[in-house]
Amino acid sequence: MKEKSIKINAVLNVIKTISSIIFPLITFPYISRVLMPDNVGKVNFGSSFVSYFSLIASLGITTYAIRECSAKRKNKEKLSRTASQIFSINVITTIIAYVSMAIILLLFRNLDSYRTLIIIQSTAILFATLGCDWLNSAMEDFAFITVRTIAFQIISLVLMFAFVRKPSDYITYAAITVLSSSGANIINIFYRKKYCTVRFVRQMNLKRHFKPILLLFVMLLVQTIFNSADVTMLGLMKGDYEVGLYSIAVKITNLVCQLVNSILWVVLPQLTKLFIDEDFERINVTLRKIFQGFISLGFPCAVGSICLANEIVVVVGGQEYKNAATSLIILMVGFVFNLLGGSFLGNMILLPSNREAVFMNICTIATLINVILNFILIPKFGAVAASITTAFSYLVMLILCIITVDKRIQLKGIKNSITSSIVGCFVIIVLCGVIKGLFYREITIIMLGILSSVVFYLLTQVIMKNEFVCEIINSINNRKKS
Image (cartoon, rainbow, N blue to C red; front, side):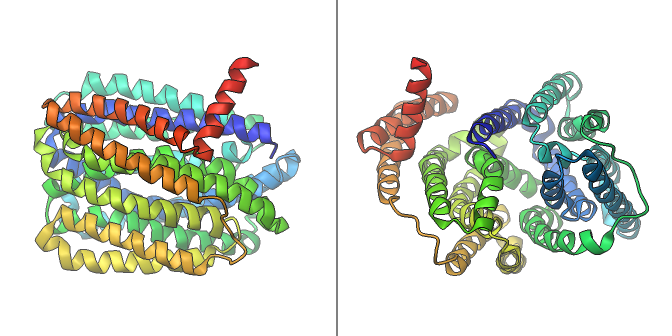
C-alpha cells in the first residue's frame, strides 16, 4: 500500500470513527433519559444475546475475506469466484445461526419477554450477510464506507428523535439502531457490482477456505464471549438495572477505545506485508510510531475519563446512572491494559505475524478467567464486579502477550513519549481537580476540563518534545505552508 493511500485511508477512517463517536454522544444522553435504566438494560441484553449468533453467521469470514479478496482485486474473474465462494459459505452459516437462535428462543421460556426485541435486533445478521461489506474493505473503498456510515447515522438520528418518546419505545429504538449499523448493507447489495459479481454457488471450495475461516472463528468466538459475557451474566444474575449501569460505562469506554484505535485497520495491511518479508527494521520503526500514538492519545483519554467519571455518567445518562461512575473508572484502567496488550501487542504484532493461534490461546485464557470470576463476584457486587473482572482479564492478556512477543521486536526511542505522556497526565489530574473545586454543574466541569486538559497537555508534550505530537504539529504546519 502506498504511503499516500495510507494517509488518505487513515483520514477517512478517523472521520468515520469520529462520526461513530459523535452519534452516540448525541443519542445516548437522550435515549438513557427516555428509556430509563431498565429498558436500556433490555436493549443491551438483547444485543448481547444476538451477538453470539452473529458470530456463528460471520464465522471469522470478514477478516479472511478481506485478506483473500485483497490479493485478487486486480483480476475481476478471480475476485468474483472467490467472493462468491465466501458469500455462499456465509449464507450457509447464517441459516445455521438463525435455526440455532430459533431453537433457543423456543426452549428457554425466560427469554419470552425479549423475543420481539431479539428478532428485530437479529435482522442485522441478515443484512450483514447480504451486504458483503468485507468486499468494500478489500477494495479499500473507505470513501464509500465513510459517506454511507455518516448518512445512515444522520437518518437514524432524525428517526430516533421523531419516534422514541417514552420508555415503551425501546423496541422502536432497537429497530432504528439496526438501521444505523446495518442499513447501509442493503445499498451495498447493488453497489458492490462495480467490483465484481457476487452470487450463491454450490462449488464453495470448502477444502481451501474452511480451515483458516474456522481458526479465525474460534478467536472471534473467544473475543465475543469476553466482550459479551459480562452483560449476559449481569442480566441473568442481577437484572436489567445493573445491565443498564454497566452498559453506560462500557459505551463510554468503547468510545474512547474507538478513537485511539482508529488507525488500527489502516496500518494492519502494511504491517502484514512487512512481517511476510521479515523486514524487522521497518517493522520496529512502524511499531514505534504506533506505540507512541497509542500512549500519547490513550493515556490522557483514560486519565481524563477517570477524573471526570462522575460528571460524565450524569451528563450522558442522567442522575439515575450516577452509580455507574465506579464501573467507568475501573473499565478505564482496564482500557490502558487492553491498549498495550490486546490492541498493540495482539492486533498489531501477533496477528500480522500470522500468530493467530498464539493470540487465540491468550484470549481464551483471559476469557475463562473473566467468566469464572464473574460467576463468583457478580451475584454480590453486580456491575462493579463485572468491571473488575474485565480489567483484571485485560491485565492477564497484557502479561501473556509480553511473554510471547517475538524477541526481534525492539521498540527503541519510546522513553520520551512515555515520560512526557505521564507528566501530561499529572497536569490533567491537577486541572480537573481545580475545576471540580470551583464549579458545580457537571456539563461546565466537563467542558472546561476537556478544553483546558487538551491545551495544557499539548503544551506539555511540545515542551517535552514528544515525537508523535511534534510530528503531527509539523505536518499540519507544512500542509498550511504548501
